[in-house]
Image (tube, rainbow, N blue to C red; front, side):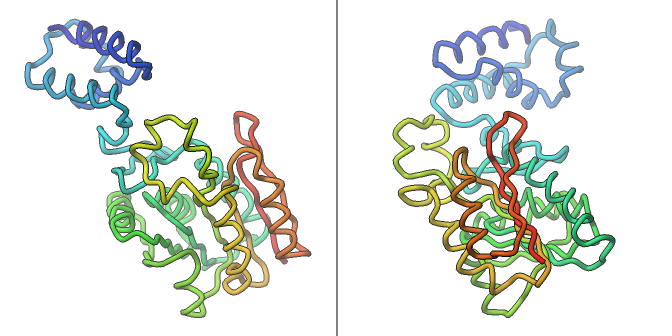
Length: 284
């Protein structure tokens, strides 16, 4: 079978299964170990039988609901490759925007101050922590997660990308509160989906991505409420808090932050698709 014939089969098969028909190209590029330019130049070549076999298995797996990123074992984030598996949430483009806006705010609030302390809470794959450290190497970066295997994968991503990060196993800010540690910047993409939303969400997400990283109580705000209880114990007098939120949650999260830090400048940021996706508080 030629490469283009395998691709056509995959597109047709995935379309019938109501999956993204372009996934076939991503999978085949992965198994052929080629960039897109090389891949397109080889469309009329014969596909090796062993590659065809694993490719067909992967297409069937995706048709059954397994995300392409888990099949491939990685995802791109801010121009870098991060390992992913079913212990971690797949990094999303919206979270790249959280990182971008955090990087824009740091020099505005802190000038050229050195040695700033940053914590990424609920780090998952480590995408936020690793990216912040590599984009701004003078930061001291710590990252927490409540689930041991998740933290282990984040450590692997830090090592693979050459980022020096302190990883701490624990629940939200509790490990830092017990240590008496304080931070200048806190970032988090916490679980924020209301539990009832599971009824209409894609099974690609609900059957494969970890529920502890997705759902947060009846209204999706449980973790934000906990943040408000814990943040005052770990923030320095001048600080930035950046939280990713679900669409439609920015008003509630902004209100929580304003109540917790009455003198803070609280701002909602809309993502590239025009959805309210981030809330920042600048304190002090």
